[in-house]
Length: 510
Image 1 (cartoon, rainbow, N blue to C red):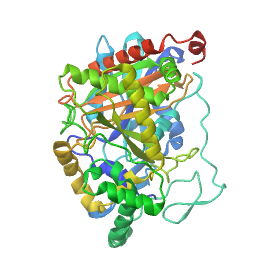
Image 2 (tube, rainbow, N blue to C red; image 1 turned 90 degrees about the horizontal axis):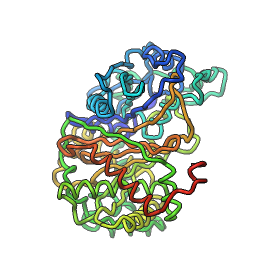
Image 3 (tube, rainbow, N blue to C red; image 1 turned 30 degrees about the horizontal axis):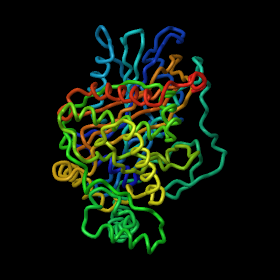
């Protein structure tokens, strides 16, 4: 069975008393099209049982290596009862958005049980307007943003009438080989993890070869040294990087970070275990109209919205830094068309680092600078190894990484924060979808807070003509998280006014 990569394991190592490293989302549903007019827990459990094989991450659990000497393995749970992972709660009256956000924040605080498959779903009844919400979370060691959305998509349909589930691939199809080297037939049960003695033997072999592998990883990272937070501040980092690029013939241009470290803000520093959540949606037609008008990308507009909202919030706190904030933007590096299987569960992502023009007062100039900055960051990212995040995670041996990661994260948050926050934009389908017969009205993603990345995370998902935002914050760092959501909507209104009215034809076809 496949062993977790260094990057996958890093999401386990980063967990602490104040950090839970799962990704999640809140689906808002209209049950009007359901045969019974309601979405029930029983119907959701039945759907999961029928389609579990379409979401491989949900049927695997961790198999720990004795004494934590190596990264864990994935192993199947043949007798898995999905009902143990599906819960239901009803909000008290009036069941408004603020109540839902409080309930979801409480659920998001709780770490997943590592002795079971690393996922949970919570059906939330009692929303105003007869709506229902589904909060679902999966550990980040098993999925990234893209595969998390694909896991949810396995449960969705194009019509209120559920489709017939695609059966597992027949056993007579081609034979493939798992990471253990033993042949495996697609559609057959995933092989079990190795036994403890085999795990220890592999761990011993890896410990012997680790110094050489770490040196190779550092060598591959050298050409990107001047673009990695903290590392770029080391004496001679630019010279080392330029020399490495000259040796390898790379044409990558250096990304001028605004400083050796991100400026200090109220939402940077050690975080607590508490979470706050707010959510909202912006018309995607408005975002596309602004992008077309100013000849930039949709993602550039999203980043500008976030920069504007952060600037407004920091001004209210009388805490706006003179330098631009620095954001980490996750980037999927999974090959197009790759289908997730039990052998490919895990993360295929990297991170792009970009300044955000929060120091610029005028909205138009802020938009233009964000567009130019993102173009430079994209060029730098395209010319750099897409695996640098994984390489960085593999430098320390597994036992030391497990112990050191939480302490290093907290130390960095106190001494020299590498970034101010994470901003993520996940593209989704532009057509209505259904879950258990209920129409999916919106999907608001939620992600991770850590000492290293700061007490604020902004994630959005485009779906059926909307850009659905989820804002997660530590209450000790951002007390009123709804204010940030309000600033995002105000920033959109500001840009639409600059771009002029959306043409009627655009509204019809967006």
